[in-house]
Image 1 (cartoon, rainbow, N blue to C red):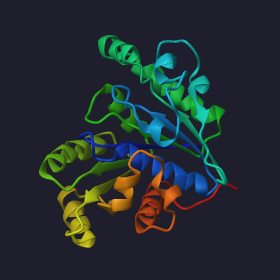
Image 2: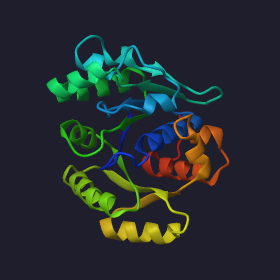
Image 3: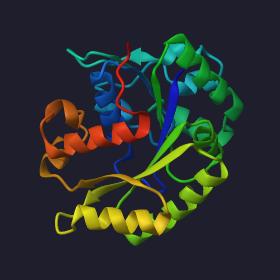
Length: 251
């Protein structure tokens, strides 16, 4: 049975895709079969973290009926990883993005494709990197998720938007919702931040990820936990993975 996990933020620029990629790498490192789908169709980017350059097959093509979603999934497992990772990227072609914006797509088809992909690849975990904000496809991904991670920065705009997302998750009866406070200034005490945020939303904080010079230097040049496996931030991504899908390894 595949565990479906959505990683969401109300605004862009929170580090949502970086969080998704790092959790995927952590889980694959534990021996799990992991799928990642880039649902941020209007501003795709997670493919860069996995070293994929201008994907030929992508989510957009599936949504237009050109091929099954399995054909858009490419293996991106890092060398030496115990498990496996498949990525379904979105198109970075401006014409494709403009078409999606103008025509939209069948949200129901997206749900069917995601479930079929999980079954075909025998995935343990399927991570959905959502589009920021709330729209029809984001609501679908949240509704079909077993767990939801909401990534926010410690500022008032993120706080207000996150209230909306938490409320939606409750209405959709998501079994498990956690918060990730990202890019936290070093002057803030993580335990205090976690306490204030969890009390404000009535939702557990899975990790408070501090602003990290190493993380900023790496930027989109790769997946942090693979480059700095012993860094305290890597441990926080592991902690988040535990909160989302547990600590088990595929038998």
